Image 1 (tube, chains in turn orange, red):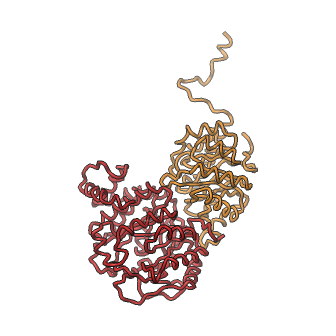
Image 2: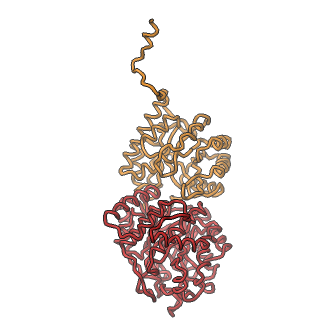
Length: 257
Length: 366
């Protein structure tokens, strides 16, 4: 298994990125990071208050953790850019997740505006991670726009439905050279393993951890699944078969007759 | 406009009430109507328990284990409307009060110090004593302190909303009070508020002016047929969600207080109130549900996790009251008078995280 996963100029050991929204307490963050080994946390700029009197998220982000700020709440490229710049300044990071949602019912991203914001911010030197509805054509445009990775949704945000959009994600993984991070929809370790087996480079999970009965243990379980899925992918996954295959092949015998 | 659907929805309501089959309904999702029917049923404890499990799950999926806290600030109680249920009604011939810009700033500074980052600015309806520019100025002050600025003022013109949005307005609260047009006419004796259509259309004017958030609701207790107002509120929210998908919708169900009302009140019981909140959550998973300090601590604490997503705290329903001496008249009586620290503590004990920040002030703060 490869020792490191290179992305955005960093060498990471963990391919599990964790979102900090929806958590019952920010106090859980250091424990989640420590036990799961995650090295990247996403933080919504709309939830940061540098002068917060109660539980300021900034106080709970462990040192050496990479913070990726997201632009949730932005409705177009212009707002996303502004939110990204504010977030980058407060959290002292150049990792930006572009999230432009214009549909409050399904929380679907606006791919077109996302491309615009990505191009602008990438040109300015930010490391841009655009969150998109899985679409190969958009992914290609994002590569041309200077994105560091592409983050297609597995299914609608917060639904825990796993890789419902699998058939649209597969071509992206197959065709796009930059890292693919599956974002949204991963609800359980089996989803995480499946995403990694498919060849995703990393996954981002929030809801499944945040609203679990034990966020720390769930983060650990997901981290294990990510590792297992990735190891299997790197070894080469056996195809599913219609017929039973003997575990001890008979090819030796066939060779000798 | 939602106003144009009213006749059709009124007819639909009668069908739901009679449990007849629903053909040619306004909204596609029939399962929503099945849940609406529960408003008419006297549910057993077991049935309520089932609803609560569902409501909790949906709330956590979409909002996480969080409750957003905000506080209201009344800046003027001048009002020319003769509403029969309101403490600020023009029918009450009392001394009125209005904050100066310096007083508004002093109030806001002290609210911010308390820990709030979301503010709801309120005025009565009076374009002479609280003109548009007065509201605009209060928003300009607010954006120095808060990331989320909401208003609950009289209906404005689209260009006025646009100007407020340009200056930092996040969202509006505009309660229709009742969707029963005859009753609406009766309880609004005089004043611009008497115009049902102008009020209900204002919500869409604000959306066209690009506010990010809309809070709607009926005043429960006005209408003997409370299910009608709940049903219309749900339909209103569904309509807004479908028509303007980029706006965040939330609903409040304020319950009228008899002591402030000059007309007969039809109290909605605690059981019906809680049922309404849970049904709202199940029908509209993404919609915020806001419970103010009109409700007592016991009620509010136990609604954490059952659908509620926002709570006001340390409210004063007189003009000012945070740092400046408050006015005389109350719009309604506060039931939950606890300090913010206490409410924060209770939310934490329930396994939820109190939140104060939900938008980015991209105008001035940073």
